[in-house]
Image (tube, rainbow, N blue to C red):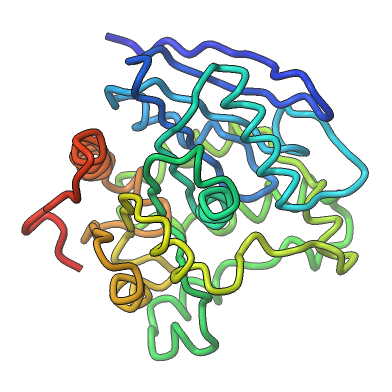
Length: 294
């Protein structure tokens, strides 16, 4: 059956656009996109296969959500609370991908009463250290071919964000057969330039909170680290140290996947999340066995 997506504007300052899909009333997954100057749409498939009610907002300044003079991750946390309130959700399973993975962690730490479980997808709990990718010749070669649209000087910020997303596709997608579909998906994204303009001005605060791993461990909620083996943005080598700092957390590394692991291996991605959410619903820790090898 084809997925049916509905759309809603959550009122406030600014308005937040939400794409949502019906599902069990007690089973809501809030999914936070990356970028941040992207929109939610690249996450729809395969999340739409899950047996959950899905809420996929565009972050403030992104996609079809409203714009404001200044951007701060704490304001995003407030927006996400408004989204849950608008849909009558007390506690949600929260997934964040890439930049959204750091936003999801900040949300869980700042508003723990609203989070039932946390999924960090293609992101990291620990900061990426200098030299984390040293010696990975394949990555060096891919990035050397990528090109930098910001050097052109004839593009707007929005155009640069779009051009950069297309240029980075070979670094983000592992499987050649997944590339065509990914490029089609990129063509549908409403890219923006609000956040990057503030970044260039030196005034953008990172969503990553100090001591995030220890603070997440104190929450005592189910945590899943979901990663692609060949992620060229957030190194897979940070998964094991995070597991040591967050007792009870689980990890699944998809072996033939990169940063956009949900596109490289959609079946494995949905399977991992589905099993994790089943465990979270039972109030216990999920044992993934061989599927969870790091």
